[in-house]
Length: 323
Ligand code: PAP
Image (tube, rainbow, N blue to C red):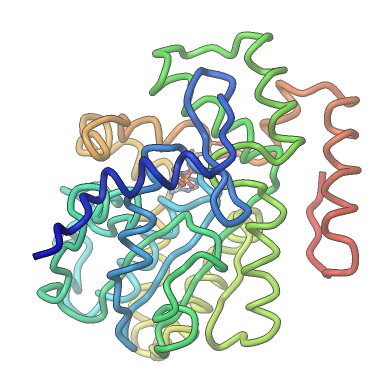
């Protein structure tokens, strides 16, 4: 009988053929299908592509890291499960962190097992991913009616947020050293960062949203901070379960908005103590939650350099950001 190839050997062979880079803190990145990923996630990405079968009722939350994923997870969990947990004090968000309630596919479920059994999860299942649209399994993109909600953020705020997250979790630092800032920024401008280039990642979902707005909802972090009530309603409508007048009168939207607010989640005991996939402090997913924090770190010249790059990459797409 022919010996089945060990997946580790397969990855090893594949890695020999792919471009690689060392990022600013010494982590290895590999370029797969036009995007940069931490090497450790290549195997789970391939497993996710190979084995995941979307159901029509699935909800997939997609983002570039540090664009509002945790917030979107909490909001979507509350909106989808509002009939089960009718009062706030019963809500699992009070005792479980959002990343446990809505797991990442490639960063969690397929990281631990090559082909996890996800059939037992009750529908509608909610999953999250940082994968670009073009790399998602076909069953999500084309062969099912599942819904995709994408959230993005001003890339400079995303960059600063990710920098802090990496410094804290990879190097145990709370402050931003200048050398690291410059190194990371240069790589960011070249599109070499986890799940980047950010412009290609965002444009993939943006174009899919333009083509089929009933399949892909496209959100911006900044818009949610401006009018969360509107976006809670929009997400519910997009998922085919708009709030009834009765629910609105009961103040359900305000309750969800408060429960999922940055201040509330940050101060919950569970979000101060838990870890994500055993390595990242959950508290580091709740840093400042502000718009424009990049102005505290980047010079006007750095911002201008990035703005020129992003404007040229986004030209003609209709997708814009305020800087
Ligand atoms: P992930 O993609 O790794 O899961 P993600 O949740 O997208 O991370 O990003 C964390 C950012 O969202 C943090 O931004 P900051 O570093 O600029 O502060 C975090 O503070 C912010 N954030 C987390 N939860 C909320 C929330 N409920 N409301 C608003 N912002 C939030």
